[in-house]
Amino acid sequence: MISPVIRRITKNVEHELERKFTGSCKVSARVGDEVNPESIIGHCEVSAGQRLVKIAHELGVSGSSVKKYLLRKLGDRIYRGEIIARRGLIFGVGKKEVKSPADGVINEVDTNGDLIVNFMPTTVRLVAGAKGQVTKVGQESIFIKTGGTKISGVSGVGREREGLVKIIAQPHEFVIPQMITGDCAGKILVGGSLLERSTIEKAVTIGVHGFVVGGINHRDFLSLGVGTDVGITVLITEGFGTTPIGLDIFEAAKQLENNFAFLSGEAKTFFIPIVKQERFLKTAQDYWRKLSVGDIVRVFRPGSQELIGKVEALSEREVLNSGLVAEVASVKFLTGKKITVPSANLEIVDA
Image (tube, rainbow, N blue to C red):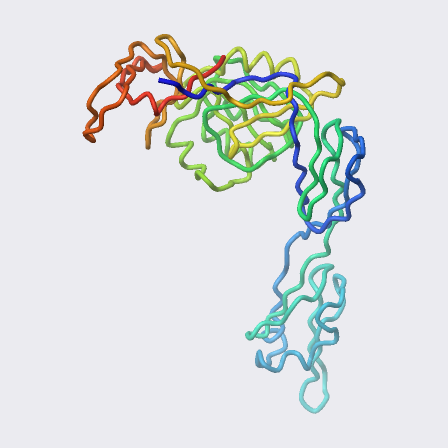
């Protein structure tokens, strides 16, 4: 049986890095520009949210009549403490006023007479994050051709996030809440054999951007919401349960500690650009080869908590429960459990 081979680590590989805009962006880089990690390639305006102001309730009027009491028009900028609306009381004695609770832009008034103020956008400088050449400038992102070390995991969750690499634990250690300190904010933490749920909760509170860890309990992984984003990115390198992070991945990350990196749970990749100009491999694409006894494989089974195992035996033709005849493999997982699975459901892990 010919099976795909996945690489755990590829060094000096060419990579097209996509730098997504965080909002409306004024691009300051052009196709062909050579950039460094700290180069500013755009200025993005990021909205900080909005505030609801109950104009009708404060003035004691109907929702449909609110607009005639407004002192400012829709689309106007307004500042904290500035009067938005005013209503004179009966016989002209006294008045009621509503002031803006924050700096922002008057967006709209709904049918209930509530006014929405969008907070003033803040300008965020978008840096390249890697040394390379700008290859494309799109409507939502900029692409940079660069190179570095690419690490692939077996499972992950969360959108792409970036940050400095920090070794948080040795391969055999549990990643516990006490390890998460203030200096972990904005970083990608690497190491450990088990990432506990309480650790994830503390990390989200502090502002950690991601984890690269050997294992996680299956129920904790599912609680992160597959296909969703809970504010942190997690890459599992070995499998579910207590499984020490592979020494190959740990040592590669340790050598590049304090470097800027990009982590994607959706793509199950951890990419660390390198500043030094070298001849990069043109591709990190997987290849195919014949499955053999002794191969380390990743197993695809719906709802499985076991991911990585070793092929102990191969059978060329066997009747499956579905009635189909296929080549099957006997796989022993790291926990000691053995199963028989169609060879087509396996990927060879190239360590």
